[in-house]
Amino acid sequence: MILAATAPQGFLSPTGVEIAFLLVGIATLGAAVITVTTKQLVHAALWLVVALGGLAVEYLLLTAEFIAWVQVLIYVGSVVVLLLFGLMLTKAPIGRSPDADSGNRWVALAVAIASAGALVWVVVDAFRTQWIDLDGAPQGSTEVTGSILFRHWVLPFEALSVLLLAALVGAIVLSRKNGENETDSTASAASRVTPDKEQR
Image 1 (tube, rainbow, N blue to C red):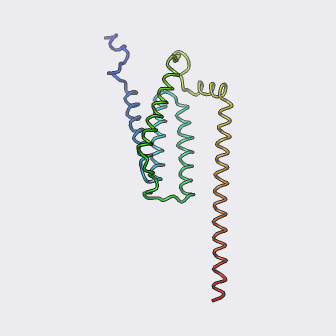
Image 2: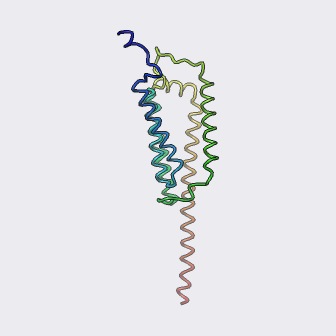
């Protein structure tokens, strides 16, 4: 009885965490597929929130709470909000947009499958001989992630922050230029209409 209770879980007897991981993964995959197939841009952004939130839940199930909260704060809380603001600033259509589909779905599907296969092969090949120290701090925790990030990856981390800042400044400059062009065109059109009314 004791041996049966302490026996490790096998492939045919998954734990509750493994079942939850599988179900959340299926839901996340479905949300991602809807994101890239829907013809409504606002709905695509909202389904992207579901997909990114599903990834955060997967990180929590893998005991990587720091990565999970970073996923929520940066991607769900910042990137998706930035996309929604971009849709509003560009006056994107609210309903179905026929221009959202380029007609190259099969090519895109082939590229996606090839990219996923290459990514899986690279990850398996890189971490095939890696072992996790179960006696140390949990992998993915705040302590381990912070130590690795600020000890070995400080320069790429700061370069990424500068890149995001440059993208934000560029978006602000482009939006202001578009606003000034619309104002100039409106003023020129009004100046053309005024002399015509005076002549009449």
